[in-house]
Image (cartoon, rainbow, N blue to C red; front, side):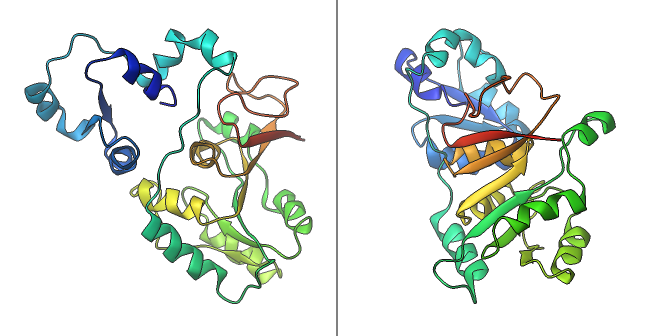
Amino acid sequence: LQLIPELQKESENLVLLLPERLVSIYKRTYPNINIYSDENLDLLKSNEDLDLQIPCGSIPSLRLEKWLRGEWEQVKLKTSVQKTNKLRKKYKDGLADDQPLIGISWSGGGKASRKRAKSLTVDQFKEVFKFFPKARFISLQYGKAEHTVNNWRDAGFDTIYDESINALKDMDSWLSQVDACDAVISVANTTIHGAGSIKKPTFCLQSRNSDWRWIDGLNHSYWYETVSTGWQS
């Protein structure tokens, strides 16, 4: 979806069909594009007369050479300023100006074997905390993370689990939660894509058996200009 501006230059009318939880984000970022929820496919069919269609994930194949040469500007998705400011104020409560908020995510998704390969254990991730003694860490982890975060907090690490945020149901609020952080440290999962899409300084703890999204030997991401990478054992 980073190549949408390029396609806009070549199209009289560009239409996006997205999962419902992404619609508000993309409408805010691209107000001049007709955007529909996949829950309202009939509405799209009745309103639009389309000549061509393509899955979003296949768009890079149209302009891959230009992409790899870096001749396109990465667009920053726009979060809700009101939501972001409210969450940042909430998380910064009691912190000094020089104490950063760092968003964290430690578990990957997918099949069980793949999930194990790109996830860190609770004890392994404690090593990350030690490098940032002044920071407060905000859980950006999908799914059931409250127990893990509470254990870290009980062990003396300044960590927050915000039960008001549910990324699986409300991606807009979750992206504002990411934006409320000063930086993000995560394994290679959706958190990396969310943080990269809003140009948040991000470090990806990349698996030694990384998939096609990551290129061996690089310390940065081709997909997001603010994402740097490193190996996890």
